[in-house]
Length: 405
Image 1 (tube, rainbow, N blue to C red):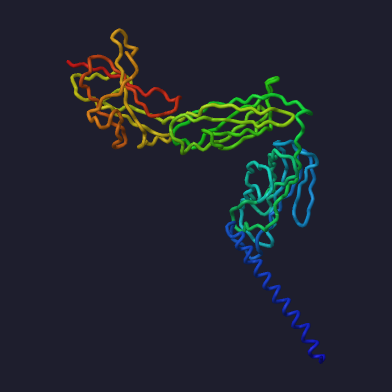
Image 2 (cartoon, rainbow, N blue to C red):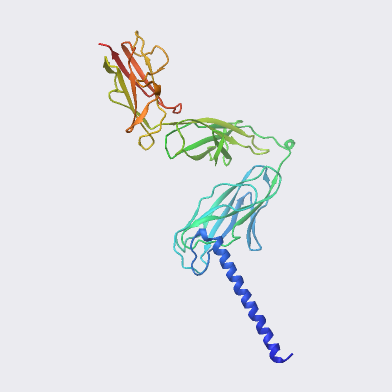
């Protein structure tokens, strides 16, 4: 082979490597843009690098970097179903970009792993000099013994150039042990749940339960309490120094009526027994107001009329008229010997339109019922409106007096 050919071959080899490098870079750029396209626009320097590191834990642990991945390893085992905390620090490297602020990073449980990660507050970076964001995360371990890991990662973000590189989350490694029941004694606990009332279309209400140990009625702090509503899980809270855990429940779409609140403490092996409790969430309308000719502040007098129009306005939490209430009307006559007692349980009113029974119809912002007075004897009557509200609803009543002549 000639010397000119030998010189040409290395040049062609270098050219092929350069082409392969360009193709690899292009493929990585396209893949990154697809992977992070929903997190924000990228500036010319490429996606920002988000770094999450562990800085401490209870029980104690240590940090290490393996293969470019941040890890936090607990030094001691965690009890079956028990919880522990890890302190984390979150920082952003803009990667050479000139980016706008503020930026928000949503944190949560990354893919894979085992255990339950409690909700974490977002990290907000207001400017380029904002120090690292610090958070304490709470993890509840599985019940089965074994070695586990759970990942704290970015689940999203807002603001310019919030693209994030893969693999920058924090892997938390821990071991779960299940002590033999012969080796320990658990303390009995008691869980009391607060009853609660709310108004139709109210945005939210706070569920609350208090955990104590029955031995001395002292509060148990740092324990996870799960809440159910009518048998469906809705959320959880951590007990404070008073043993009270809370959860803010979205009540905006709940109808009027009574709901059962169940709260559960799953216990801690070799420490505290499980316990549970229940209470009622009662939802009512914001207001039920009688309209003329019936006067709710005093008995209205009707003489020799065939029909008494019963009218009410029903409103929600915001004071807005409710058009879809299920309103029914009942009446009872006061006894002849007193003005404070009725003769018997309320009976359905008779309507001039028999097809509607005793149900009120909605028209022009109010509910209307034309009470047929045929067969009524003279005297004082109590009108009661039934709307299917919760048990905490006040009486929806008004009094009228009827005389033939």
